[in-house]
Length: 152
Image 1 (cartoon, rainbow, N blue to C red):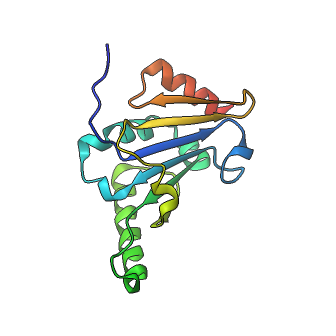
Image 2: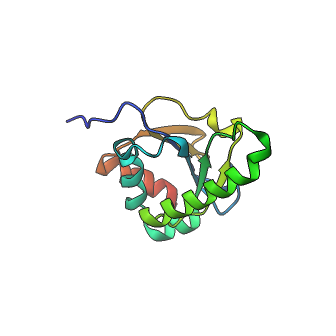
Image 3: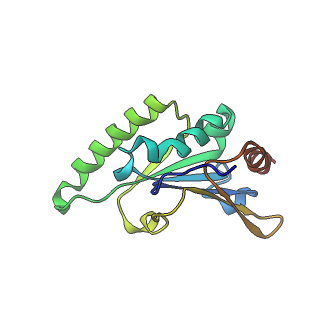
C-alpha cells in the first residue's frame, strides 16, 4: 500500500552515521524547514509525525533544526524580521513539542536544498561511504532502520 503525500512539503532532513559528517560532533541529523510554508498543516504532517516518533534523547542530542525564511524586502528591517521569526519559531516549537535546538537562516544557502518535491530524509552513512534516502512519511520498518543508523 502506498501512502499519499501532499504535493509540497517544506522540509529536508539530513542525517549522518558519523559525527564527523555533521555540523558538530553533537548533531547527526539536520532538519531543514522552510518556515515561510509552515501554514499548511497537511504539508507539515510528515515532519510532525517524524519528529514525534523520535525519542526525546535523539531530539535533544542529535538533531539540529535549520529554520529557513525569506529575508525582508527592506534590508534595514533585517533585525526586526529575525526577532519576529525567532518568536514565531519559539511558539511553533513549543506548540509541536519539538525538543531540538534550531538556528535561523534568511540567506540562500539552505534555501537551495529545499525544493517542491516529497519530504525526505537523506542519511549520510560514513562507514558505508553511501547516502541513503528515506521518503516521508516513513513506514515503520524504514523508521526503525533509520533510527538504528542514527543511534549507532
